[in-house]
Length: 406
Image (cartoon, rainbow, N blue to C red; front, side, top):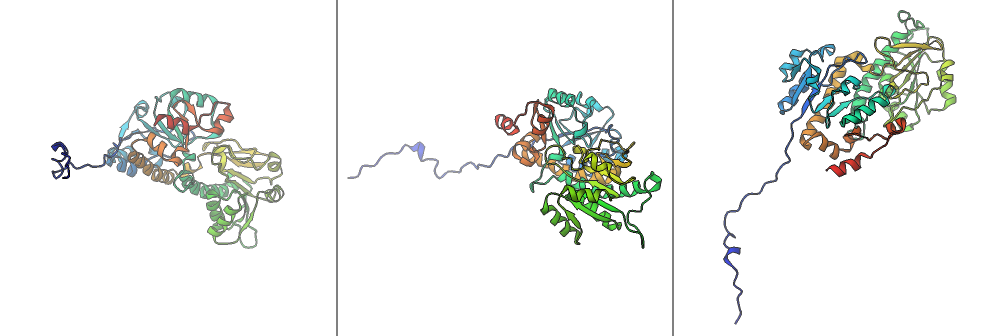
C-alpha cells in the first residue's frame, strides 16, 4: 500500500483562485526645470530654445523660465515665449534657480557666481578665452557642465556642431566675399569673377561639414576651390557629395604653401573631437600670403588653425597681420541668429525629452555615452583630459565617478 504524503492546506488552497496582476513598474520621470538667461557676451544674438520648442517642453510638464528680452535679437518676443508656456523673469537670479541652464554663449564669471551645486549647465566653451580662474570657480560650484561642441549622437557625430557648421560654412563664404570688396577696405576682388577675368581662389582647410557647405557656396558664386585634409576618406566623401571633381590634397606642407601664396581667401574649417584644433598654417606661411587676402578661421572657438589667429567679436570682427585680413569670430552663426536659434533648438529639445525618459539629466549622462562625452566638469571634478593637461589640473575619469554614484 502506497503511503500518501499529506500536504498542508495552506499550500494548495489558493491554487485556482484569482491572482493579483503584476505590472512592470516604470521609473518615475522627473520633470525638468529649465532656465535660459539673456546673453551678454560675444555680441551673442541667438537663444537656445524657440517658442515652439518651449511649447513642446511645457506640454510634457516641464517648467521653463526665460529672462526678459532673451530672444529679442533672434526676433522672438517675450509674448511668444509666454504664450508657449514659459515664465518670463525680470531678474537673472530667478533664471539661475533652475536645475538645467541652457546657453548659446559660454558662461561669464558673473554667471558662475549665481550657480548652485548639482545644477546642469549646457553651453559651448571657447577654448581661446577659457581661463584657469573660470575652471576653478566652476569646480568650486560643484555643478555638472557640458560643452555642446563635444556632445555626440547615436551615429557618433557631433549634432550641434554639425548643424552650426552648415551655417558657418555658408556664412564664412558670404563674409569672405564682403571682406574682399573695396567697401570693406579689401582688395576689390569679385569672388566669382566674370567673363575674361579669372575668379578668386579659395583654399579650404578641412573636409568636414563646414568645408562642404563652404565649397558649395564658393562654387555657386563661381570661385576656384582647393580643399586640404589629412583624412582621404573625408576628401572622397566631399567630392561625392559635391557631385563634381575639384582640387583636393592631403595636408602636405609643400603643396599647401603653393596654394596659400596665391589664394585670395583661406577658410580654416578643422574640428577637434576633444581638445584644441591643431595649427596647420604657421606665421611664416601667413607672412608670404598675398596683400589683401582674407583668412576666416571658423575653428577659432577651438583655438584656431592659423598661428596668427586671435578671437574677435562682431563689433570688431577683423584685424590685419602682414596685410592679411583675419576674421576670427567664434560665434559666426550668430550673424543669422534666428536660423541658428531654430537649428540649435531642434537638437536640444529631443535631448531634453530623452532626459525625461531616462528619469533625469544625471541618469541620462550615465546611460548615454555620447551625451556623457560632453561633460567637462562633474560636481567639482575636472573630467576633460585636454583641459587637465592645459591647466595642469587633476584629471578624473567620469566613468569611475558615475559608477560610484549609481
